[in-house]
Length: 131
View 1 (cartoon, rainbow, N blue to C red):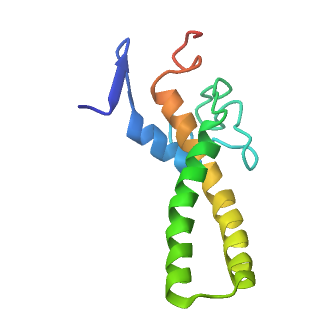
View 2: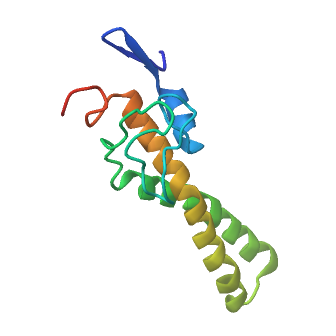
């Protein structure tokens, strides 16, 4: 199984594109920025002029973020409860802010990766044709 998708003699690596998006770089060139604000995808890459306005990330990044954060927070919360049995207010003081902070940190990473995936798979107009 290969991670490179070829269409009309133009190969695109899925893992490279997702990795570039996850570090907030253009999935096409790896140099320009994929975001112009916190979660606002740039219309075009500022380096290679790749059109990024086609993306349709929609609900995928929040879904993946919830999945990842939940798999980090829940085991930690259970471990702390079983090991130390802290008061309820201590749980609230720790897990609420930690969950929110972690979600806000991971959300742009997952959104960049989803945009990179869509670019690599030529989804939503990234392949030069409309769906």
